[in-house]
Length: 318
Length: 95
Ligand SMILES: [Fe+2]
Ligand SMILES: [Fe+2]
Image (cartoon, rainbow over all chains, first blue to last red; front, top):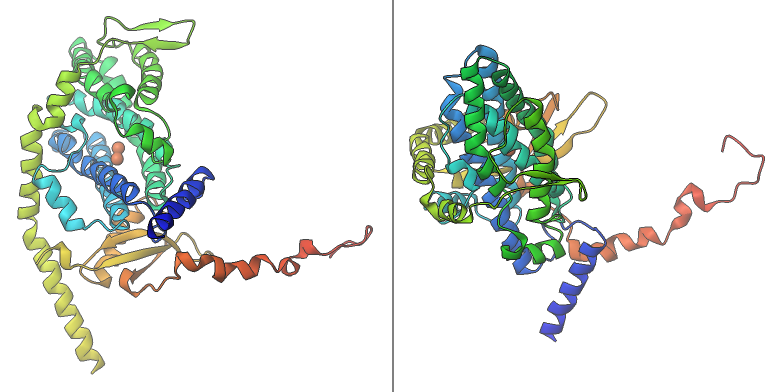
């Protein structure tokens, strides 16, 4: 009887999903659906937060005040994205503190792209253009995700993302049209970020163990390879337009399919970075831990101030 | 003391005069005043609002989704509450 009941609930749940009815926090959902979402949303949140570090590296060294204000605004947006996502994870019963501890202990993952260093100002261009570009490609279909709070968070995020990619492309365009040294700097940034950006879409469909179930639950709407192909098709002409070369000898346009064919991704590198052996994995997690420790006094002060204010209000009322 | 002790607040924003406050998300803060200040930083960076309400999530009492059928079904069966239920003869206007 009890088992029948679960089966029936699961059937009704899938029927809702198939009819594009959103799932909301207090609705019944299978444990595996909840766990998958908590994992995905918290990884996504961590990526937004850790993603501030490579760019934060250049805020104080931006070439002029306009670029500095723009980069600051962009990085501040990413902090907001992290907050929307942690909140969405909390609606599923995830504990905020535990979620963050999992990042700091190395248990939780975040996007491998943020484990690469930012060596020159041109990297701010490459990140906005390619990394935010790839993120947008991933996030737009998530606006239609079956879980309401995640989908709503993604709508806000996508609205804010649109300037991120443009400011990056503007930096690249300016450098590409600048002195030979500036153009070389832009090309070097593209060379270093192109392949890691393609890796952002995750393993090939054949290797991606969660894809099928996530598609059935409409957590995911398009496969890794579909999204990666879209990204390549859109981005290659943009590079050509500003006179930069995609670092891929095998890249060619297939007139029959209307798509670009591209070279093999170095999956060994991808898995090495995912497993924690990328150039900056240790720095990134250390920086987050330090930020938490160094910010402790702020949280303590806020709590003390809240208490003082509450007491004062009580006195006033007495 | 850490974040864990800060309550969760639901944030509602009025986007302009004449419209009601609408739920936009949630955040954690030590008290109501700081929740409003954080909400301003997080949810109104692009002029999305002119007024903010915050309510502690614990204080929201919600209906039970599993009772949705019995709670809302009666409304579905009373179609005569909608103007489209009635036949209006041809030639009648302003009704
Ligand atoms: Fe973001
Ligand atoms: Fe972004």
